[in-house]
Length: 144
Image (cartoon, rainbow, N blue to C red):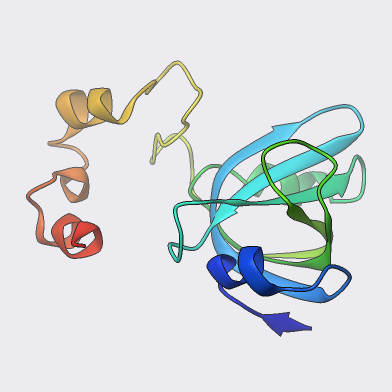
């Protein structure tokens, strides 16, 4: 088992190896057959998709995996069956470093509460000062 940044995984990791991906949940989507989690660690603009069969992960674990949660996913790197990415991680284990309560941190990209980053910045910048583009934390992260 090896840890590589997502950027290197997408470029060089051989299919069939066991990998650990650490990062933040961008989106989670559940269907009746599978759970799809898009992860990003900041090493690239691209996400890597992690897939678990329905019922594989405990219900308590699934509730904690929300947009913005910090997780480590261990699994087999396999060729992707879907369009948009070459490889994905077939989940064997998930470790949650830090959940992101959607009521305290409204980061849902597809939800009705905050349907765009612009709305978050204009409507609630005073509540979420770290999202202010002029805030030192945001400037240091966004600097090229």
